[in-house]
View (cartoon, rainbow, N blue to C red):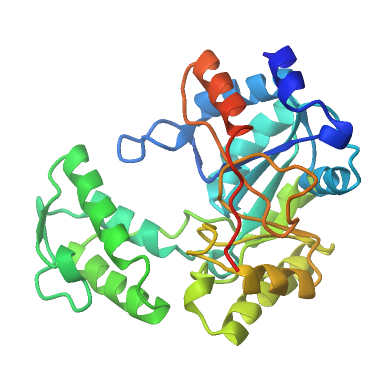
Length: 324
Protein backbone atom coordinates (compact mmCIF):
# COMPACT_ATOMS: atom_id res chain seq x y z
CA UNK A 1 0.00 0.00 0.00
CA UNK A 2 2.82 2.43 0.77
CA UNK A 3 3.84 2.85 -2.87
CA UNK A 4 0.22 3.60 -3.85
CA UNK A 5 -0.06 6.24 -1.14
CA UNK A 6 3.27 7.68 -2.28
CA UNK A 7 1.78 8.11 -5.77
CA UNK A 8 -1.33 9.92 -4.48
CA UNK A 9 0.44 11.98 -1.79
CA UNK A 10 4.10 12.42 -2.77
CA UNK A 11 4.83 15.34 -0.44
CA UNK A 12 6.42 18.71 -1.06
CA UNK A 13 4.65 20.95 -3.60
CA UNK A 14 2.19 18.15 -4.38
CA UNK A 15 1.67 17.19 -0.77
CA UNK A 16 -1.73 15.96 0.40
CA UNK A 17 -2.87 15.73 4.00
CA UNK A 18 -5.37 13.10 5.15
CA UNK A 19 -7.02 14.01 8.45
CA UNK A 20 -8.92 11.19 10.13
CA UNK A 21 -11.83 11.79 12.50
CA UNK A 22 -12.90 9.51 15.34
CA UNK A 23 -15.34 9.98 18.19
CA UNK A 24 -15.45 7.08 20.62
CA UNK A 25 -13.14 4.09 21.09
CA UNK A 26 -15.10 1.53 23.09
CA UNK A 27 -13.46 -0.93 25.45
CA UNK A 28 -15.56 -3.72 23.95
CA UNK A 29 -17.99 -3.84 20.99
CA UNK A 30 -21.43 -2.36 21.63
CA UNK A 31 -24.37 -3.84 19.68
CA UNK A 32 -26.17 -0.49 19.90
CA UNK A 33 -23.19 1.40 18.41
CA UNK A 34 -21.82 -0.87 15.67
CA UNK A 35 -20.25 2.07 13.85
CA UNK A 36 -17.93 2.95 16.75
CA UNK A 37 -14.52 1.29 16.92
CA UNK A 38 -13.63 -0.90 19.87
CA UNK A 39 -10.14 -1.20 21.35
CA UNK A 40 -9.12 -4.25 19.31
CA UNK A 41 -10.24 -2.68 16.02
CA UNK A 42 -8.62 0.67 16.83
CA UNK A 43 -5.37 -1.11 17.67
CA UNK A 44 -5.50 -2.80 14.25
CA UNK A 45 -6.24 0.50 12.48
CA UNK A 46 -3.37 2.23 14.29
CA UNK A 47 -1.06 -0.51 13.07
CA UNK A 48 -2.08 0.14 9.46
CA UNK A 49 -1.73 3.89 9.86
CA UNK A 50 1.70 3.61 11.41
CA UNK A 51 2.96 1.36 8.60
CA UNK A 52 1.41 3.20 5.66
CA UNK A 53 1.58 6.88 6.63
CA UNK A 54 3.73 9.56 8.18
CA UNK A 55 1.46 10.43 11.11
CA UNK A 56 2.04 14.02 12.24
CA UNK A 57 0.64 16.27 14.99
CA UNK A 58 -2.11 18.29 13.33
CA UNK A 59 -0.52 21.68 13.96
CA UNK A 60 2.75 20.52 12.41
CA UNK A 61 0.87 19.04 9.46
CA UNK A 62 -1.04 22.30 8.89
CA UNK A 63 2.20 24.29 8.83
CA UNK A 64 3.81 21.80 6.47
CA UNK A 65 0.82 21.97 4.15
CA UNK A 66 0.92 25.77 4.01
CA UNK A 67 4.67 25.80 3.43
CA UNK A 68 4.52 23.00 0.83
CA UNK A 69 6.93 20.82 2.79
CA UNK A 70 4.72 17.93 3.88
CA UNK A 71 6.37 14.53 3.82
CA UNK A 72 4.89 11.91 1.54
CA UNK A 73 1.84 10.10 2.90
CA UNK A 74 1.11 12.77 5.53
CA UNK A 75 -1.74 12.02 7.90
CA UNK A 76 -3.15 13.43 11.15
CA UNK A 77 -5.52 11.78 13.65
CA UNK A 78 -8.31 13.68 15.40
CA UNK A 79 -11.07 12.93 17.92
CA UNK A 80 -14.20 15.01 18.45
CA UNK A 81 -16.35 15.83 21.49
CA UNK A 82 -14.28 14.70 24.49
CA UNK A 83 -15.44 11.22 25.44
CA UNK A 84 -13.84 9.60 28.48
CA UNK A 85 -12.85 6.55 26.44
CA UNK A 86 -10.55 8.83 24.42
CA UNK A 87 -8.38 8.96 27.53
CA UNK A 88 -9.07 5.54 29.00
CA UNK A 89 -9.00 3.41 25.83
CA UNK A 90 -7.57 5.37 22.89
CA UNK A 91 -4.61 7.02 24.63
CA UNK A 92 -2.81 3.79 25.65
CA UNK A 93 -3.24 2.40 22.12
CA UNK A 94 -1.93 5.57 20.49
CA UNK A 95 1.02 5.60 22.87
CA UNK A 96 1.83 1.96 22.14
CA UNK A 97 1.99 2.74 18.41
CA UNK A 98 3.90 5.98 18.92
CA UNK A 99 1.12 8.07 17.33
CA UNK A 100 -0.04 11.59 18.16
CA UNK A 101 -3.67 12.74 17.93
CA UNK A 102 -5.62 15.96 18.42
CA UNK A 103 -8.62 15.86 20.76
CA UNK A 104 -11.30 18.48 20.09
CA UNK A 105 -13.18 18.97 23.35
CA UNK A 106 -16.63 20.50 23.88
CA UNK A 107 -15.93 22.03 27.27
CA UNK A 108 -19.50 22.29 28.55
CA UNK A 109 -19.70 18.52 28.99
CA UNK A 110 -16.53 18.05 31.04
CA UNK A 111 -16.82 16.70 34.57
CA UNK A 112 -20.16 14.92 34.39
CA UNK A 113 -21.95 16.48 31.43
CA UNK A 114 -23.67 14.60 28.63
CA UNK A 115 -24.34 15.52 25.00
CA UNK A 116 -27.96 15.52 23.82
CA UNK A 117 -27.47 12.57 21.47
CA UNK A 118 -25.99 10.48 24.27
CA UNK A 119 -28.91 11.38 26.51
CA UNK A 120 -31.21 9.98 23.83
CA UNK A 121 -29.10 6.86 23.25
CA UNK A 122 -28.75 6.07 26.94
CA UNK A 123 -32.43 6.77 27.63
CA UNK A 124 -33.38 4.25 24.96
CA UNK A 125 -30.68 1.79 26.03
CA UNK A 126 -31.53 1.87 29.73
CA UNK A 127 -35.31 2.24 29.74
CA UNK A 128 -36.97 -0.56 31.71
CA UNK A 129 -39.89 -0.50 29.25
CA UNK A 130 -40.35 -2.49 26.04
CA UNK A 131 -42.23 0.50 24.58
CA UNK A 132 -41.18 4.15 24.81
CA UNK A 133 -44.27 6.33 24.66
CA UNK A 134 -43.48 9.80 23.30
CA UNK A 135 -47.03 10.73 22.37
CA UNK A 136 -47.71 14.34 23.21
CA UNK A 137 -44.07 15.33 23.63
CA UNK A 138 -43.93 18.93 22.46
CA UNK A 139 -41.69 19.63 19.46
CA UNK A 140 -40.99 15.92 18.90
CA UNK A 141 -42.81 16.02 15.55
CA UNK A 142 -42.98 12.67 13.73
CA UNK A 143 -41.35 10.82 16.63
CA UNK A 144 -44.16 11.73 19.04
CA UNK A 145 -45.42 8.17 18.92
CA UNK A 146 -44.83 4.82 20.64
CA UNK A 147 -41.40 3.30 19.87
CA UNK A 148 -40.50 -0.37 20.24
CA UNK A 149 -37.33 -0.68 22.31
CA UNK A 150 -37.38 -4.33 23.25
CA UNK A 151 -34.24 -5.45 21.40
CA UNK A 152 -31.00 -3.97 20.05
CA UNK A 153 -32.28 -3.41 16.51
CA UNK A 154 -35.41 -1.69 17.75
CA UNK A 155 -33.40 0.48 20.13
CA UNK A 156 -31.08 1.56 17.30
CA UNK A 157 -34.04 2.43 15.09
CA UNK A 158 -35.66 4.41 17.92
CA UNK A 159 -32.71 6.53 18.97
CA UNK A 160 -31.63 7.15 15.37
CA UNK A 161 -35.10 8.48 14.52
CA UNK A 162 -35.23 10.62 17.66
CA UNK A 163 -31.78 12.14 17.18
CA UNK A 164 -32.45 12.94 13.53
CA UNK A 165 -35.76 14.58 14.44
CA UNK A 166 -34.41 16.88 17.16
CA UNK A 167 -30.83 17.61 16.02
CA UNK A 168 -31.62 20.80 14.12
CA UNK A 169 -34.19 22.23 16.53
CA UNK A 170 -33.12 25.49 18.18
CA UNK A 171 -30.75 24.49 20.95
CA UNK A 172 -32.93 25.41 23.94
CA UNK A 173 -35.94 23.75 22.32
CA UNK A 174 -33.92 20.64 21.46
CA UNK A 175 -32.53 20.29 24.97
CA UNK A 176 -35.95 20.73 26.56
CA UNK A 177 -37.44 18.10 24.26
CA UNK A 178 -34.63 15.65 25.02
CA UNK A 179 -35.09 16.20 28.76
CA UNK A 180 -38.76 15.22 28.46
CA UNK A 181 -37.84 12.15 26.40
CA UNK A 182 -35.31 11.08 29.04
CA UNK A 183 -37.92 11.51 31.75
CA UNK A 184 -40.45 9.44 29.79
CA UNK A 185 -37.88 6.64 29.47
CA UNK A 186 -37.63 6.17 33.23
CA UNK A 187 -33.92 5.39 32.79
CA UNK A 188 -31.09 6.16 35.19
CA UNK A 189 -28.61 7.98 32.94
CA UNK A 190 -24.80 7.88 33.24
CA UNK A 191 -22.69 10.91 34.06
CA UNK A 192 -19.27 9.48 33.16
CA UNK A 193 -19.40 9.37 29.35
CA UNK A 194 -17.32 12.51 28.86
CA UNK A 195 -13.84 13.32 30.12
CA UNK A 196 -13.04 14.92 33.41
CA UNK A 197 -10.79 17.96 33.40
CA UNK A 198 -7.89 15.94 34.79
CA UNK A 199 -8.18 13.49 31.87
CA UNK A 200 -7.89 16.33 29.34
CA UNK A 201 -4.79 17.53 31.17
CA UNK A 202 -3.41 13.98 31.13
CA UNK A 203 -3.83 13.82 27.35
CA UNK A 204 -1.91 17.07 27.00
CA UNK A 205 0.86 15.88 29.32
CA UNK A 206 1.10 12.65 27.31
CA UNK A 207 2.03 14.70 24.24
CA UNK A 208 -1.40 14.78 22.62
CA UNK A 209 -2.87 18.00 21.23
CA UNK A 210 -6.01 19.65 22.58
CA UNK A 211 -8.33 21.61 20.30
CA UNK A 212 -11.48 23.67 20.86
CA UNK A 213 -14.90 22.35 19.85
CA UNK A 214 -17.21 25.04 21.33
CA UNK A 215 -18.78 24.89 24.79
CA UNK A 216 -22.17 23.27 24.15
CA UNK A 217 -21.65 21.71 20.69
CA UNK A 218 -24.32 23.84 18.95
CA UNK A 219 -25.07 24.04 15.25
CA UNK A 220 -23.22 27.30 14.65
CA UNK A 221 -25.18 28.06 11.49
CA UNK A 222 -28.38 28.18 13.58
CA UNK A 223 -27.00 30.71 16.09
CA UNK A 224 -26.73 34.47 16.22
CA UNK A 225 -23.21 35.53 15.17
CA UNK A 226 -22.28 36.90 18.60
CA UNK A 227 -23.40 33.67 20.28
CA UNK A 228 -21.43 31.54 17.82
CA UNK A 229 -18.33 33.65 18.37
CA UNK A 230 -18.74 33.33 22.13
CA UNK A 231 -19.04 29.54 21.90
CA UNK A 232 -15.81 29.36 19.90
CA UNK A 233 -13.75 31.74 22.01
CA UNK A 234 -14.99 30.55 25.41
CA UNK A 235 -14.17 26.92 24.70
CA UNK A 236 -10.61 27.92 23.85
CA UNK A 237 -10.31 30.07 26.97
CA UNK A 238 -11.44 27.22 29.22
CA UNK A 239 -9.07 24.73 27.61
CA UNK A 240 -6.07 27.08 27.72
CA UNK A 241 -6.69 27.68 31.42
CA UNK A 242 -7.00 23.94 31.98
CA UNK A 243 -3.84 22.77 30.20
CA UNK A 244 -1.73 25.90 30.65
CA UNK A 245 -0.88 26.11 26.95
CA UNK A 246 -2.12 27.81 23.81
CA UNK A 247 -4.96 26.15 21.89
CA UNK A 248 -4.65 26.91 18.18
CA UNK A 249 -6.96 24.38 16.54
CA UNK A 250 -10.75 24.33 16.20
CA UNK A 251 -13.33 21.83 14.96
CA UNK A 252 -16.83 22.87 13.85
CA UNK A 253 -19.58 20.88 15.63
CA UNK A 254 -21.18 18.43 13.18
CA UNK A 255 -18.94 20.14 10.64
CA UNK A 256 -20.82 19.92 7.36
CA UNK A 257 -20.04 22.96 5.17
CA UNK A 258 -23.06 25.10 4.39
CA UNK A 259 -25.31 23.18 6.77
CA UNK A 260 -23.58 23.25 10.16
CA UNK A 261 -21.26 26.20 9.63
CA UNK A 262 -20.68 28.82 6.94
CA UNK A 263 -17.97 31.15 5.61
CA UNK A 264 -18.72 33.59 8.43
CA UNK A 265 -17.69 30.98 10.99
CA UNK A 266 -14.48 30.22 9.11
CA UNK A 267 -13.79 33.97 9.22
CA UNK A 268 -14.55 33.99 12.95
CA UNK A 269 -12.03 31.20 13.55
CA UNK A 270 -9.41 33.22 11.70
CA UNK A 271 -10.28 36.47 13.47
CA UNK A 272 -10.19 34.78 16.88
CA UNK A 273 -6.59 33.78 16.25
CA UNK A 274 -6.94 30.07 15.63
CA UNK A 275 -4.29 28.59 13.34
CA UNK A 276 -6.65 26.22 11.52
CA UNK A 277 -10.11 24.69 11.71
CA UNK A 278 -11.47 21.36 10.51
CA UNK A 279 -14.80 20.31 9.02
CA UNK A 280 -16.32 16.87 8.45
CA UNK A 281 -16.35 17.18 4.67
CA UNK A 282 -14.47 14.25 3.11
CA UNK A 283 -11.34 14.63 1.03
CA UNK A 284 -7.62 15.21 1.49
CA UNK A 285 -6.24 18.72 1.86
CA UNK A 286 -3.68 20.26 -0.47
CA UNK A 287 -1.94 23.64 -0.43
CA UNK A 288 -4.95 25.31 -2.09
CA UNK A 289 -7.30 24.44 0.77
CA UNK A 290 -8.63 27.07 3.14
CA UNK A 291 -6.81 26.27 6.42
CA UNK A 292 -10.05 27.13 8.24
CA UNK A 293 -12.06 24.51 6.32
CA UNK A 294 -9.77 21.49 6.25
CA UNK A 295 -11.51 18.23 5.30
CA UNK A 296 -11.59 15.09 7.46
CA UNK A 297 -12.53 11.51 6.74
CA UNK A 298 -12.29 8.03 8.22
CA UNK A 299 -12.77 4.75 6.33
CA UNK A 300 -15.28 2.45 7.97
CA UNK A 301 -14.14 -0.76 6.28
CA UNK A 302 -13.03 -3.65 8.47
CA UNK A 303 -10.61 -5.44 6.17
CA UNK A 304 -7.08 -4.15 5.62
CA UNK A 305 -7.48 -4.07 1.83
CA UNK A 306 -10.83 -2.26 1.79
CA UNK A 307 -9.64 0.22 4.42
CA UNK A 308 -6.60 1.03 2.29
CA UNK A 309 -8.60 1.30 -0.92
CA UNK A 310 -11.06 3.69 0.65
CA UNK A 311 -8.20 5.83 1.92
CA UNK A 312 -6.91 5.95 -1.65
CA UNK A 313 -10.38 6.84 -2.99
CA UNK A 314 -10.58 9.71 -0.51
CA UNK A 315 -7.66 11.41 -2.27
CA UNK A 316 -9.93 11.69 -5.33
CA UNK A 317 -12.88 13.17 -3.41
CA UNK A 318 -13.71 16.74 -4.32
CA UNK A 319 -13.06 18.87 -1.23
CA UNK A 320 -16.18 20.81 -0.23
CA UNK A 321 -16.19 24.17 1.53
CA UNK A 322 -19.01 26.28 2.88
CA UNK A 323 -20.62 28.20 0.00
CA UNK A 324 -20.23 31.95 0.16
